[in-house]
Structure formats: C-alpha cells, structure tokens
Image 1 (cartoon, rainbow, N blue to C red):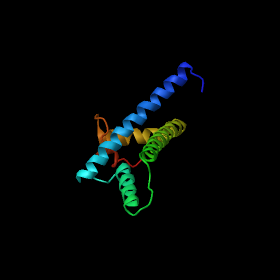
Image 2: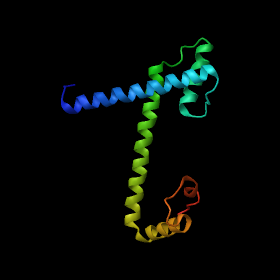
Image 3: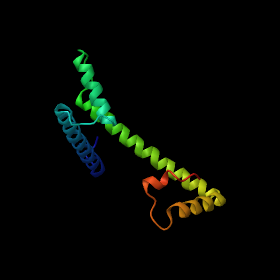
Length: 125
C-alpha cells in the first residue's frame, strides 16, 4: 500500500492490463452486436452467456467480472505453462537417455527447422 517504486510500477502494469482487456471486451461486444463475432473462445463464451442471462432477466456478469475472468485465465495459463516447461527441463536433465531420445525425435521430424505447431503434434516422446 505504500507508494514505493515497485508498488507504483505494479499499479501501472495492472492499470495497463485492465485497459487492454477493457478495449478487447468492448471491441468483441460491438462485433457481437453487429453479428460478425465468433464465440469460439473464452471471451466469446463469457459474453454470450452474460447476454443470455441478461435477456432472461437475470443479472449476469458485469464487464469488470468478465475482465477479471480473462485476467485470471491468462495468468493461470501462463503459470501452468512455465511450470510444465520447468519440470520438463528438470526431468530431462535427470534422465539423459530420454533427453537423447527426445532430441533425436525432434531432429527426425523437424530437421534443422524450428518446430512448427503442426510438427509438434507429431512428437510422441
């Protein structure tokens, strides 16, 4: 709560995130009103559900609630991914034979190219 340098920076980052998410939600709401938005992602599902609740006389979620849900999923997803990658590296370093197998498989499927989204689905090890 003290106005330290770190706390000020944290609050500024938080305000930027909220502002960006607010812009994204506002844009999607306008697209939904025009009928050009696809509701095949988390934001679309949340907004469609919210609109259905409001049409049936229920209160539904506020825009702030939708923004908080999106922020939570983003942060949780980022943390989950980083933990997965960390443990993968730890386990590969503990088991060099698996590290060699994984490296050989990547080289066999991807060659010298950087792995693409399509090539990742072919990796089994």
